[in-house]
Length: 263
Image 1 (cartoon, rainbow, N blue to C red):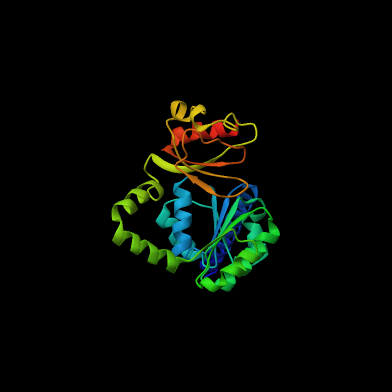
Image 2 (cartoon, helix red, strand yellow):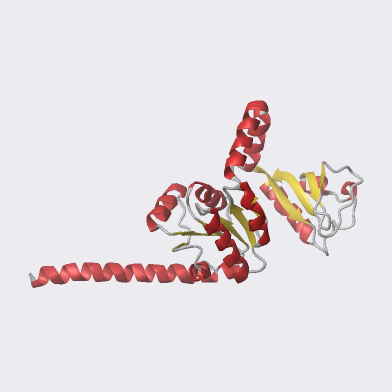
């Protein structure tokens, strides 16, 4: 009996000890991360967003109340992603996920008020973080914008718009999906900023040699000051410092264009 009880006790103690060690390793890993993305909530929307980021090679940390939900998600994506079990509206949990050093945060919790409070907490911890939040009620969008959410997503409205597109112009939808949603394809659309010391700054598109050197197609340009888009810019379009190029090409070609944009 003594031997049996000692083994049972050791089993539980060692199990708790191993779990504590694992959590501590995970916390150290997240604290070392920089310019990563934090996805809060692995429900339908958060799960899909985190999966796309992981498949795209972006560093991501997942937060959810349920460790079982996280483990199910990790089995689905087949990636050993860092995660934090806890309430994402708690600042301590956000700090464990390294929000202070993150590039972006996706608020995909079930309730609008939770996403709103989460966005407010994240903004206080990191004034420069980009926040994308799920919003179920369109009338709540103004509140999200007031706390510094850059982009508000309405799942029901997007779903309805998608069904409309599938009905009216299915081939266009399939083409765009092939570029944006199928991460296994080599041909993708990406954005490339034009930095201050870039060789592209101040040049006409025809003189930039982008097509010659990278074979990338520039399908749009976003102006830094007005935030307006120029679609399908012509050869005389002048590339200004701070502009963002919307480019179509292979991943290797887009990497070469990014080097031109950095200078």
